[in-house]
Structure formats: structure tokens, C-alpha cells
Length: 96
Image (tube, rainbow, N blue to C red):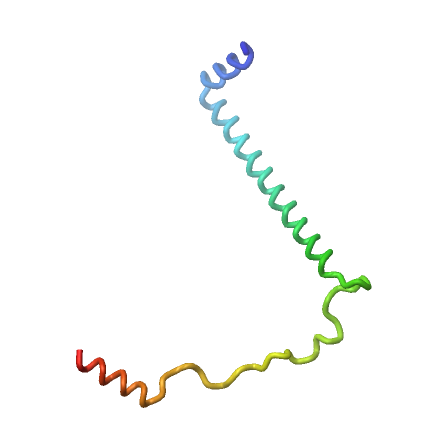
């Protein structure tokens, strides 16, 4: 314990040394966090690649990609009120 307390006393005696060590540790922590993040992304990419393969070893997609989607494109009209509904709303607001 005597060595540890001597190191702590030396660091506290020189504030610039304390700042240097603190900044070094912060830089190391950021580097380690970035490495963990990159490794997690690699693991996710590997898992997606693994599960995206079909039983015969090919990846998804292929000849069927040129066909239109099975769901229709939707209607051309949009949501809205018809004229009679707008007039009805106007009458109710004028009473208040």
C-alpha cells in the first residue's frame, strides 16, 4: 500500500501530471468503447449474413426481383372531406 499512496501523492503534487494521466485514460476508454462498438457491428453483420443464406448456399433475391410487388399501389385519391361534410362542420362552428 505504501507504493500506491506514494504514486497518488506524486500525482496530486503535480496537477499537470494528473491531467495528463486523466486524459490518457479518457482516450483509452473512448478507444476501447469504439472497438467494442465496431465488434458488435461486425457480429450483427455476420449474423445477418448467416441467416440471409438459403439452404443451397445462395443469398436471398434473384430471378423474382423483376416482378411487381403483390400489393397494389393504392388509390389515387387521398383522405379528405366531401363538400357536405365541410358545410356541416361550418354550421356547428358558427353556433359557438
